[in-house]
Every structure is written in C-alpha cells, then in structure tokens.
Image (cartoon, rainbow, N blue to C red; front, side, top):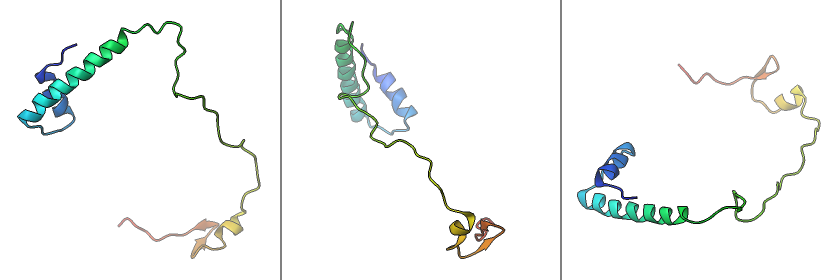
Length: 95
C-alpha cells in the first residue's frame, strides 16, 4: 500500500501538526515503510492461532470483594472543620 504526500498532509492537518516540507517528505517515506511492513504481517497465515491481548497469561491479582462495615456518619464527620445537617460544609467556590 503506497501512501501519498497528500494523505500525510491530510493526517497532519487532522492532528493539528505544522510540518515543514522536509518533515512531510520524511514522514511520507516512513509511513510508507510502516504500511509495507503491515502488508507483510497481513500475508502471514494465522489460521488456528488463538488471539491474545497479552503476551503472557494474566490472572486477576486483586482479592475478592468483601462486605465490611463502614464509617458511621458521626465518625466520618468527626474531623470535619465544619459540618451541618450530617454533611460536610465547604466554602462556596463559584461566584
């Protein structure tokens, strides 16, 4: 698959990149080489290969959720500098 300079310019505009003429020429060649490599990968026979999301098998490293007692309202508000009607009271920040 050959990429054109116009396509590289279009992508750079979408990404809001200001590229010089030299950078456009360089990126056109680099992107073309990348697409050639992708074409080589597409030519590989992957029939019977199981898709993976990670190179090594992964398991959940988290412990199972357990229901535990939480704070009471009075405990949660015990260190609050200002509490009113069982809630934290904070200064107004929007004028």
